[in-house]
Image (cartoon, rainbow, N blue to C red; front, side):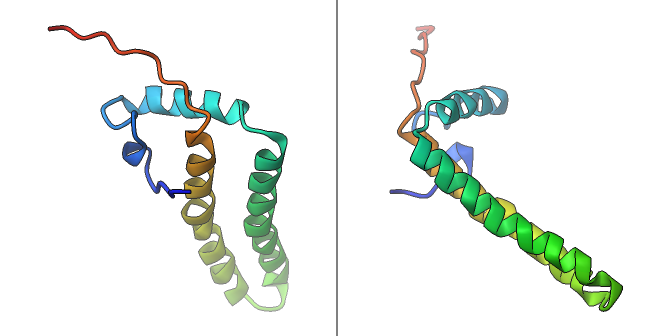
Length: 100
């Protein structure tokens, strides 16, 4: 499985506008199987739950708020590439019309 860190790197989506790429990926996400959706949601929880645990610790240690922010920054770096990679096999690209 190839990991895509940007929607511009996905084959077939390179030359499309951002709104169209997002719409196609959203439609592909709806066609994902239940195990794929479950894997993606568990991964999201593994990134988000520590953020809230660290925020709860700010009453005793204010530096945990900095750690919470750093962990929250991991969300797009970890979750999005996996989400794009899982959605790629469910993409159904509409035919483009040539203006030649």
